[in-house]
Image (tube, rainbow, N blue to C red):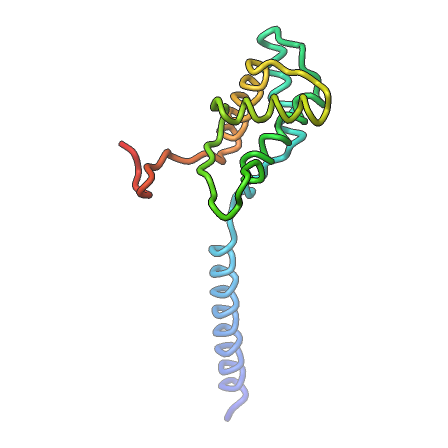
Length: 149
């Protein structure tokens, strides 16, 4: 093998290795998301809710009140509010009557603080707005798993 053919062979081998390395990098870049993952940050949710309540002129609830309502809603939605965990109940996110009543009652019993159902419903409504803003809410589906039209 002559000197020039050896140089050509090494150059070809180096070129093939560079192409393989570029393909590996490209595949890895495609696999990783190019967006920030969705994150529900309770402090951000409290801030979002507080700003909207203040804009409506409702300043009765402090940040800790809003946080307490959100924590009890999360507790409710996790299914921990049901009596028998062997027979799960369907929970609906948002401020429906059963969740609002549960949250109002638990906060009154456990913390000795009374919030009106309207205040709790407002917090839950703005929490839903926060979820929409961060992109965590998808299209509604029916109970069969198909999309509603």
